[in-house]
Image (cartoon, rainbow, N blue to C red):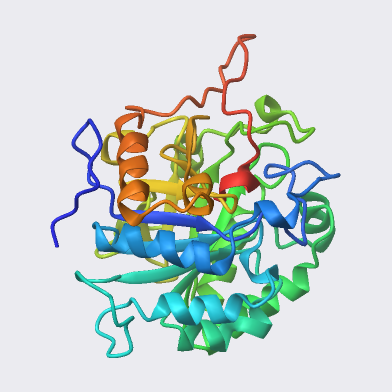
Length: 345
C-alpha cells in the first residue's frame, strides 16, 4: 500500500514510536527529574485505544512500530498488548480479521532492561526480533548514579536473557562528558562478548531534569575520531533499520557501532518518524513542542476518518528540522519543555 502519511516536505512517515506509559522504575538524569509526578491513570490511553490508533497508522503506511515509555515493560498486561500488535507483522495468518494493506515489517521495543529477564521469551513469541536497551555505564556505582535507582546486574541479566531468546540487541548509550566518556572502549569490548551492537547518542536538551546539559554535552564527531585510532571501522552493510543512527562495523568484534548526532550533525531531512505519547498526543518531532490531541478524538466518539484527518493536520505542521541547541558560548540552551520520558526515546 502506498503511504498516505506524507508531510509538507515530501517525507513519507513509515515509522511510529508509541509510548505505552510515562512510568519507569529508573530516573535517568537525562530523561526525567528525580521526583517525578506521573500522569493520573485515566489520562493514559487504554490498550484498546492504543491498538485502534496503531491500526489507523498501519493501514495508512506505517511499517515499523517501536514501543517505548517511560519503561514499557512496567505497564501491567503489556504482554497481551505485544501479542496483539504482533499479529500485524507479515507474513502472519493470525492477523486481525479486518486488517488491510501490507501490515508491519517490524515491531521493536526500547527498554532499560530491568524487566527483560521476565519478558524476553514473550517478546520473541510476539514477533519482536530486536530490542534497544539503555545502558550508560558498566560500573555499578556509576550506573546507579546515572539511573538514580537502577541495578546494573539486573539490566545485564536482561540483555543476556534477550540474547538467549534469540533477540538482536542494540545497546543505547548517552555519551556524557565527564560522566561516562571513559567507558566507550569497555562498552565496545563487552558488546562484542555478548553479541550486541552499540549506539552512542548525543545528550539532548529536553525538559528540566536538574542536570546541566551544557556541561554534559559531548559532540560525537570527536568521539568517533578518537575511537577509530584504536578500532578498525569498516562499512556496515544492512545495519540500522529505520532509525537515525549511522553505523560502522568494528573489525575486531564483528559488531556494529552507531552514532546518533542530533546536535552536531542532524538527520532531519530524511526523518520518517512520528511519536505517540501514552496520553494520546501525537508529536511529529522529538525536538519540538507542537502536538495534536488524538485522545480527545477517541474519547469523543470520533471515527477513524477523524483520526486520520488529525494525523494529516499534525503532519502539515511537522517542522523541517528540530529545535535542539547546546551552544558553545553563553547563549541559552534550547529544546522542548517536555521531558524525554513524555514521548520516549
